[in-house]
Amino acid sequence: MTHTAEREEKQSQATRIDGKAIAKKLRESIACHVDVLVTDHKLIPGLAVVLVGEDPASVIYVSNKKKSAAEAGIRSFEYNLSKDTSQDELLNLIQKLNKEKEVHGILVQLPLPKHIDANAVLETIDSAKDVDGLHIENIGRLMAGMPGLVPCTPLGCIALIKSVENNLTGLHAVVIGRSNLVGKPVAQLLLRENCTVTMAHSRTSNLPHICRQADILVAAVGKAKLVKGDWIKPGAIVIDVGINRTEAGKIIGDVDFDDVSKVAGYITPVPGGAGPMTIACLLGNTVIAACRQNNLTVPSIG
Ligand code: GUN
Image (cartoon, rainbow, N blue to C red; front, side, top):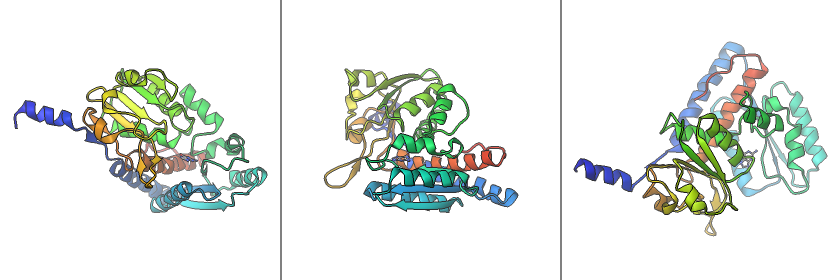
């Protein structure tokens, strides 16, 4: 094959960013840090996972989080509450977990049933144990560029991007989606990496035109196969955070993978991209929280 043909061949198919493999490496590195904490400091990081109701997707997420925690040597404490649990009962449980010395991280799986005010719940979690990074104090710390706990999926997105491009300075990043869980925090992290960031969302005019300017495109809008190949700047890094279920029960992303793969330089699959990174980063946050609560040096994870 000639060099040109080789280049064209490369251009015709984006390189897949293997989130599953990157997350596995990250979990292994976290397990080593946990080993050190246990051996040198008799400290077992502990994560409380609270699930209210039986939303099928949430049940699977929570079980995966528990399994991954155990594999990394992190102790998990599981609370499966009935869908009729009152807000007061949930707040009382969180207040109890805030005081537990063996619990370093608290995660309340979202979404919560409609009768519960999710913000009131998130604000009740001790910000030092808020491994989801959703407490207002941690949101503020992220905005101000101060140390805190950062939401897991955005952390995972940055790790995926940096697995293929370490220096993001000056790159134009477009984020589609403005949720507190992904869109807003990932934009902050991209700013921290010196990107020029455009925030787009479902009401943005001329979205394809804006996306075509992106060196990095993060899609977190919850619309199956929204992003098409002709929205992509050739060679761009495309991170798909969408989790959409088809009628046949298949999970697909916000990006039309086959079409976008013809133009992008790098692309994450769904499943097997951002999803596994979220769990790995949750374990990382639990270790960070455990170290801070015990006045130990926080290891650099990753
Ligand atoms: N539901 C979907 N993603 C998440 C997440 O990252 N954290 C929590 N707590 N709930 C979720």
